[in-house]
Image 1 (cartoon, rainbow, N blue to C red):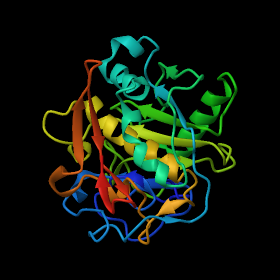
Image 2 (spheres, rainbow, N blue to C red):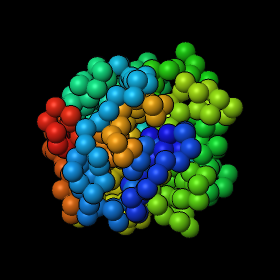
Image 3 (cartoon, rainbow, N blue to C red):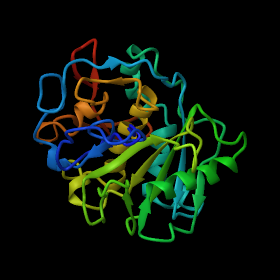
Length: 294
């Protein structure tokens, strides 16, 4: 989530205690996905991290969201030759993938999607970022250049999700970093443009490679399963709280933040599907059920 720096799937090492600026969502407090070091507390209503039901703060939501992947450091051949890339694409495109677990979003002012694959093609850039430390500014600039080159340009109904190799790490600008960085605090986050490097109505997420133990799920999960976990988290939050002014609880937690990891990973699950693949997910908070649901 990027509450201009509020975390979204930040999987923070420690639960954040306040809001950052208003532009990022590091999943634990609007935007960032905290690491699994925070997996013991349950972030649902009444738990250590959350604070009651999600509240509608009136900001825009996405009613038919699309997702475009930007693989920064992979050639186009990776779409079929690289298992990590291939499985992430299937997770978005398959009728048995991510789309199966967004139904609970409809209660949040008709947030939803009829299918995440739109008319715009994914972006492959064989040249990785010029430096190992990938800043938020770099991510926004990459999104701006990438979507501007696509048919239809940068679209407001789309979440542009940036993947970087295991040799690189994300730096959100607050001193916190993802896997590979000097101050591991989150695994991914979503945000929106700052109006300078990227138009403020364009949504994005940064999806660092889950190369460290702090961003891994249950034993046996592959790197792409761990990444699917973060993709579904950030995509759903980008839909229900795209500009960090829509749905979150009294503590600042978005719907997926409230169900991040869970005690001993209890909010994580896998499903084997008729398309021959096994996908990885996390639960999401439902106001109507008053708990984390699949």
